[in-house]
Length: 478
Ligand SMILES: *Cc1c(COP(=O)(O)O)cnc(C)c1O
Image (tube, helix red, strand yellow):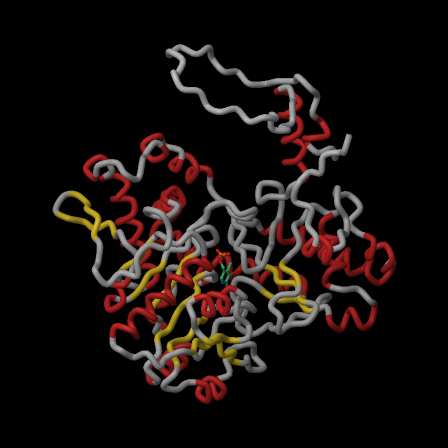
């Protein structure tokens, strides 16, 4: 496919600027010596270029997208309609407070509902993503320990199955990361946890269900061990889709929580689009939350700044329109729809696992929640077919591959998360395709190594793509 620079034709234009209807300014902007080398295209060529590009991408609206750990559910269009209301999109964050009462009501209502779902007492919507929420939550924990002159707590415990952002956030917040091994069931090894805690423990970061899709039944004991040692418990809420409205992190013993509104609460994501990773906490941590907090006051709303706050982690109030989408989703589904969505997410994952388990080896089968992990370790030894081969073959059938080679504790892993928005027919179709792929793996392994055949890019050199990316167009020398 041609790049936009290669489509450029000198003199082609598509701007439709109206004639100037105000007096020309007295001062002039200094012009650059050489004009920028921008592509020149007519409107139709520009439109075709981006339409062609869009057709090469796979989104939730194109087909099945079982990307484990990412919760690529369908995002109802009504969320977009609400986020596009001019009353929201036309706001300026520095407007007088009496003119933004509706926006503050959105933040305050979303805070109340998400506190109800998580079992927390207060929430900030400033963090822009899950990882950003983790960092913010850890700063809250640090501010708490510091406020009590408890400065010897330098370590954060993180299970070895954790998402990579957990240890990264802990390191960024200035902590030393201690990795806690998993037991044979894929959950936290309690003996290892007990051996690791001490007066230097600042806290624990954990997601439940965890990164292999299992609910850790020892969760109350785990959070108790940390609390007994004087540490705090951080809940990575990226997997809340399996338990929202059913189990609350607060009741599991957690003190701080982040949510991925762009996963669980239905905002389009991927490709770096705006997300939100709001952080909720229990009462005793609330004074440390980022400023400003929208609070109800009489009939209206006001903004409050706590003296003990960790400050700002992002400009103004975070990605506000993502909160509008999430609130729309909450109000649409309601108190019955939210737990029903979680149950269907778990049902769908278990149904698909059931359809596949005779042909694909599962890493764990007990207590599987909203996602499951296939391991092709044995298959690779026997037929040479790897997780990569299966994932690449799926592309030719119009399915986005599952998450590959993650979590790290499972070899040749494919992590599948169908989400609740897929129909039974879609799951059965996907299972049939995966059966066909494993048949082909045995009958024509060479062809499978060559797949995909129908995409514009097949198997790029992944190391070169990561290490020597070509991120800008190199103009031909003339
Ligand atoms: C996605 C994810 C994160 C990070 O969230 P981002 O919004 O991508 O920063 C953290 N933990 C888990 C378990 C996740 O799946």
